[in-house]
Length: 333
Ligand SMILES: [Zn+2]
Ligand SMILES: [Zn+2]
Image (tube, rainbow, N blue to C red; front, top):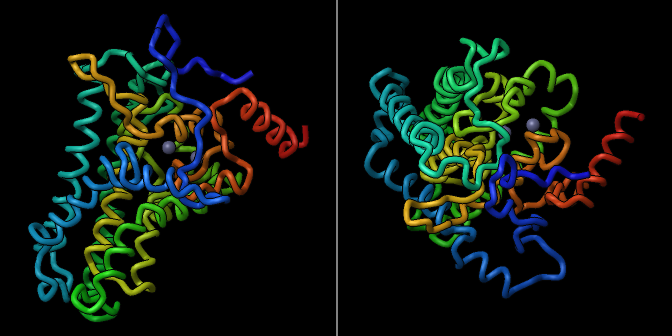
């Protein structure tokens, strides 16, 4: 039987996350043009509200906060430090802000919470005896460090001409198309690296650390082994081989660094003080991965690789039974 109790346990009466979870109407056959247009231009949709915010942040970062390329031809702490400080500030703001709202101020209590318990466990299995402290440690100590390392090496390579730089004036349409396709590239890359991390050899050594978080909170998102961080952020390397601009690299790496905060928020709806309810995207999809491990390896559905490779858990009892059968077969039971 599927555990369909998320959002309704402990006397919670809010509607549970909507199921079945269906892939976005992008790579579907037969094509669904009306649904696609609604997805592209509606809210919530591909752009609104989240991707627009990440895109805006990347543009702001490039024009307002990024040191001159000429200065980045040689590594020096003055500009590398700026990039690290920026990334740390963004992380504290987003991860800390969401954690503060949902788990410290408890702005909506347990309304629309998917977790059984709040992700604030005190237990010896966590570093410093605390889930949140361990999560913050891996995020700030390794996650932001690896994120920054990829970013500064990419800047340095652009600055020295080791990577050819796309010109906005010469190829504006390609520039925009590449920019807006980055979230889909991330989805696909995440599926493949995450699927590989579930191979028992990699899982035991590296990925089990992330899965210590069965009840998830924003800080759990980036709580990974340093090797997993290196693999997770490696998607930015596409800009070394596909003609790009530093702005593409910034959007790519910044979204990779910040999106897990909301991806692990543990709630599936935002409830305001005036009792207005807003969608915060398909948060249930990755939540199911944390609960059952062997499903939903990818992003939440623009490139539905889980669907194509048979590991899509759509939250329904039927889908759950399929996953259990698959799991039993794989374990030879
Ligand atoms: Zn996760
Ligand atoms: Zn996993």
